[in-house]
Image (cartoon, rainbow, N blue to C red):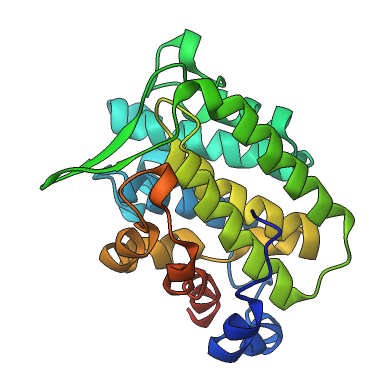
Length: 253
């Protein structure tokens, strides 16, 4: 699924052709922002999408003088996600390493036996109106993830243009969310995975792109674009363009 180029030509016309220039214009220098700082920002914004109320300013001030703060669950969630990003930045993208990253980021989200392991229970996504999406049954998760990572490995082994990298990264993000392989932490893991793939293909400096901030700033559109069916078997990827075209826009920040 994540190797599907059916929508690539339309993607190029909509935004893909802008990507090489957007990358060239983006300031990746340490003068602009350090990788350490951007990683913390990424973790804050990704956590905010999931309902965490700690903003960047508060988290950075906490980092400066931890002894003056009482570290509650929300601060711990962000610190765990920072640690997961750091693991990803130091290791190659693989299923094993993703599970390690999830084990870290879900420390305050799940009991130990559920961390870094695929779910064994049904999972749905709920909104104000009730159930909005039912993920694939737990007995099929390992099979779906085996296919998912086989496709990712194929892409990692291929020479891809920057346009293709961003296209496939967004498809990876989208498909991962639809499989929903974990009991919790799927959104955080999906956004990490998307950036991990980009950095693996285009260089470590791409960890600095503010994709999580863009998704947070456009959260209604982000959630709306992800919804392409009421369950795993009714997903219509012909509707994927609204989601795929979001990612490159973070380079305009």
